Length: 304
Image (cartoon, rainbow, N blue to C red; front, top):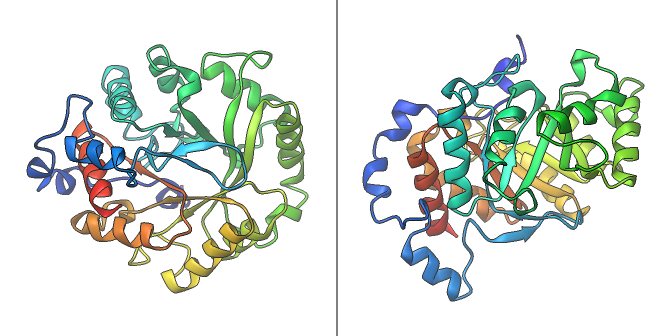
């Protein structure tokens, strides 16, 4: 349980809803993209739902992603606790709003909920990222097959876009005997085109530095916000590492943008800070209501 507070980003629901009513007025029927944002898109300006390159992976991903693991642990999260109807509705609202990046993990128990959402969402129109909680010691040979089964597919017909090793904390983890079986398995699945990109989510600065410079890593998921809340170190230490990862061709994904709810009153400032860095390709934020999605998309549209 010691890792619980570090592994998932989210929003304080009560605080988040304070002040969102005005921000969400005037949204289009698509549920998150205002007419002003649509006009900007037509004028060639950046929007949160643009599809952008994720490093050198060849994957196109929307700048805005939806996280499914707010306070996620033991295969449950605030999102799964919503129940199938509300959680699937939330995922569909995100997709209808233009979000094409879904952030999952075995630790969150969110695979089967996304499976139900995929009954309504074309699989090839969304980028699915998931994470292996290697601490459970499950045989690497069965992990990907189980993930695909939970998502409603099979190993011979399905694929995963991005698979990360979850919550890396050690310096030099990519050379450890403990990680080698998982890395070898993911490399094999990548060669067979069952996984499109591999990498790590990091929860200590040394692990993030390793990921930024590892030849094996395609994608880095890192905690970043202007105040250093729930991060691997102060921004002035984390930012150079993210820029190095970007320079090395890694896809860089940001999480904890709102500091797990602690920065909910400075959402626009946090978004402006992250996008001002110039090294983050996309972000994932845990939402629990459709208006949470609408508000962040509106603010991202303003910032971008």
